[in-house]
Length: 348
Image 1 (tube, rainbow, N blue to C red):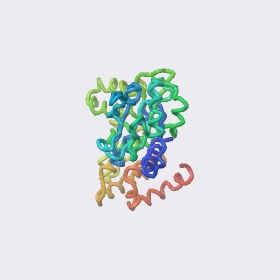
Image 2 (cartoon, helix red, strand yellow):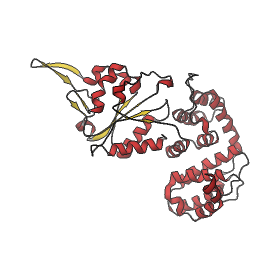
Image 3 (tube, one colour):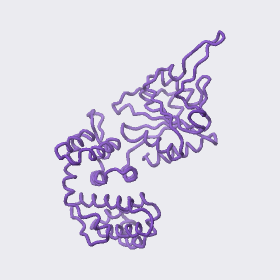
Image 4 (spheres, rainbow, N blue to C red):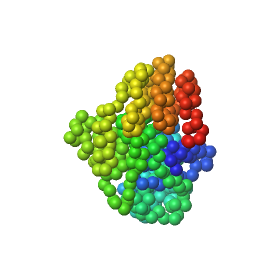
């Protein structure tokens, strides 16, 4: 399931808690695909906290609590890390991360917590959802097979990387537009992980964010930049990205396009991807209002000039994900739509 669908699923699960219809959800996927980030986005959208418990770092007693004697009997001190309505709030998300890396004794201690929302004298507050995440056994992480009793306590979702979803997130997060252009040009490198090779650095949604940081830190040093990129996404992808960045010196003047000047569309397909990503970012930065609509109109006019009309469709699709319905209100949108009508109707 692509990340945007997973987020919509978790959003519905969170809102179902109050009605008593919530089912704990287990997210499966290789490292770096954004499982934890999706949970954080759901929490942020609802303005609630996330209590992130890494089961791989716990002992069974850490969940059950410490025993102590009271009037000749044993009581259990409730761990402070578990959600508490007074300390954390009446609503939130209990996130059991790295659950497949937890030793069997620890995962067994979580059985009652996950299904019955209880653990000894402790009860999960009624407004809290329970989500979990872990790597698959074939991902070469430190994993244990999930016991059947534990697996039967979850609804299970496989998280798969998706370029359109990543691009929409990247534009909103301010990721370097050159990285977005590169991955539009080489989409298969969004996630390239072969567990049989046991790589140290490899391309993933998480490591491309690291590459964005490397560009900000080392972009002015041509001696260090290739190595910095390779350190984030692996040698092969790092070399490709560095070569792509060098070629961007031939890019047309993006600001001139936004001003409505007559600027030629570059011939190279890699440069066309770079122009498209840069124009999406300019459309986002233009904001609302009359000037923003004028900028969107000029971008749409330029999108209609791409010799490969699919490139214009990609540009406008990314722009729509970023600015929403406002794009349809621009007069130039209908003109662009007529130019690519056959592509939209028959090829997409």
